[in-house]
Image (cartoon, rainbow, N blue to C red; front, side, top):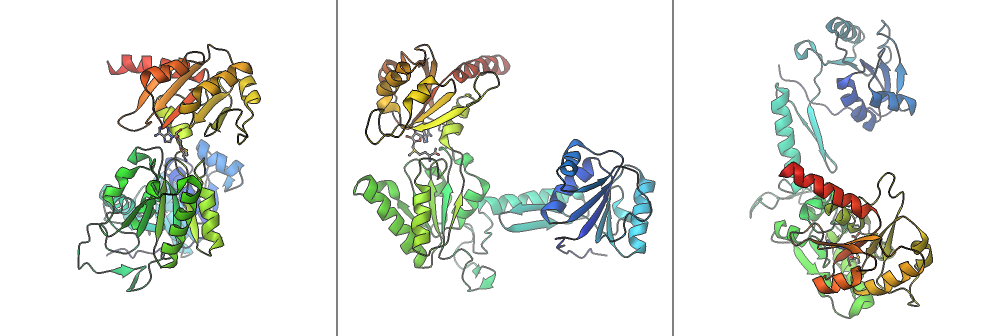
Length: 429
Ligand SMILES: C[S@@+](CC[C@H](N)C(=O)[O-])C[C@H]1O[C@@H](n2cnc3c(N)ncnc32)[C@H](O)[C@@H]1O
């Protein structure tokens, strides 16, 4: 007989899990996500389950199964490696009319756990009788939803084509759930693969997209043909005015009932004016959400094998915007502190002002020999890295014609990248 698929709402309801091995370690976190109150019965448990018990997130009885353990449970999971114990647990559950799942014997199990996945706010569950086949179908559906090929908004996806039935927000002809709202999305440092899953999902659902110069623009090519793309980098009137016009565009498109995605480079709140856009939307009464992104401050050094922290080398890192040089009255950076620190410095928008920066850091105590890397076009096919020292970097930047966008990393972590690159050469040779 066909199984009957249900979505269990387990908030505050007891689930008894018997067994503390690999299967329990996989099941317990998603039961917790569903709000279940978990009693775990097992003499031994994995480290991750032990951590959950120590944190008070589950109750762990460190002993073998005993009759009566299933009392009060809404669901029972029998996942020991002893079929006899699993059978006893399942029988006890059956006797009290509680659903149970046996991990060791699907044929003897009252309920089956579907291969499940998540894409945004959509939960997917697949049962096919063959767990591997179910998992493969689940993966295909989740990948389709995440890529936008299947539309989570219920609208025809980009392959829907003209004439596809349009079911907006689950209601034929109804309002899509995100209409009239804005999503501020961090697109990561440039490689289109570095946007987050949620960022891409929201982007794929947008009616209007406002992009920045440093956003991963190659993603735009994958959007539906009817999406209106506004290149915010081309809005005139200079920096401050441009921001006002961007805010106005976000608000007016949302107020016209569209779902607006603001695609930014890196993380929207790291020197990205994302919070200004959030505030402007809220002040205009427009609902807004933000999707964090991989900031270039960390992602670009990593793409050049530079860890911004490394045990025994750097215990702190400072991310600094050098859009105005040291000494400029608009600068709020404490260069004396940075010069005296031994932490890693990650400098953004610094290439054109590198001479003044170097001068200031050496003046306040950084050694002229301090290693420095400059990474331009990080994570893109055109990525370039130059390695130097504090004393030499200005002339090397000029000689090599390094242009923005670039990240300057100052500190001994640069030598770790050299070590990694050296070993990498041996491994790939
Ligand atoms: C206005 S800031 C925006 C930072 C962004 N919100 C983030 O979190 O990465 C622009 C600066 O970020 C750095 N940057 C952004 N993308 C980069 C990339 N792909 N390679 C090197 N530097 C990059 C450069 O220093 C550039 O001048």
